[in-house]
Length: 334
Ligand SMILES: NC(=O)c1ccc[n+]([C@@H]2O[C@H](COP(=O)([O-])OP(=O)(O)OC[C@H]3O[C@@H](n4cnc5c(N)ncnc54)[C@H](O)[C@@H]3O)[C@@H](O)[C@H]2O)c1
Image (cartoon, rainbow, N blue to C red; front, side):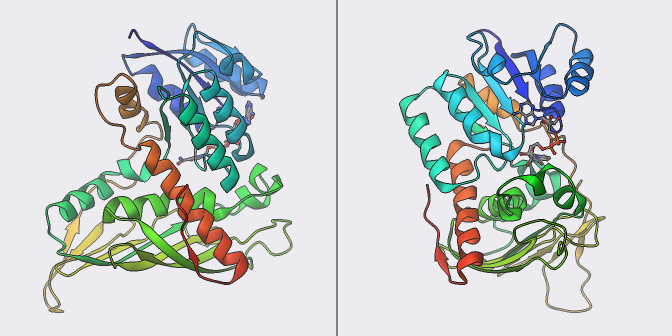
């Protein structure tokens, strides 16, 4: 296979996708798409020779394009992903890759009909040096047996749901939009799947704004292997964007902090914890695309494989159902 010809739809974070594709030698960025003229023209100007198009079909139906990055609004991901797969294109789609469970099933079916097509999603916390280091420590056995994992998504940007496009959609889920990162991170760290959730939520922070879903959700979670934990999304927090993460094993405890993380290996209050200076988040938003390209070319494994994409959102579907029903929900993996 020669160089993969790639296009990007949606040029907010999608501009980062374009930057990433531009420096992958096995790829050729050929087209960028945005409804907003100023946006598409300014991004295209950064990449000489790249076509700027207004309508997504000009990329999705272009037979010469092999890979499409989808970074449009959440409610367009499903149709664009379905179309791209139907056209035999590999898809790197922003999270959440769909909004509803039936859509996830439809994407699964579509992928089953197009066996050669690969799908990945931008679950970018996996590339954070802080969490990569943590995972390596867990894999080396430094934590003993994990028994409690907590992660939160402190959004710190409430205006994006009270004033931006997110709050204007018929359905927007803070769990799908933010919690999906945490669901993926916790399961990736644990090497295990969440099987049951029980969630509560409120919308105090966005009261009166017109936002129509919970902006603050906390779910108690149970893993298949016996560990338990907590997954939270807090979109109203008076706090900068941050991912509080605490991992408890029988031999060590990890606590994430803004400037550094802390590793505790003793119960002695006099014993100083180890300060972990690993970069956080320390990633470029297009960083996962390189391994996806390698996987498409049969030269490695994608950092986020198709199963991960479906698994993390399946947990979110269960949390969303639990917070609205008030009952515990078993995760049904799509
Ligand atoms: N993985 C991450 O860390 C991360 C970070 C930010 C955003 N996102 C996701 O990326 C997506 C975009 O969010 P954003 O923050 O970049 O939004 P944004 O508003 O900054 O940019 C979106 C751009 O896409 C364009 N657009 C939207 N729908 C389109 C369509 N159907 N056709 C053509 N152009 C279209 C808009 O005109 C806009 O310029 C969302 O799904 C969001 O959840 C993911």
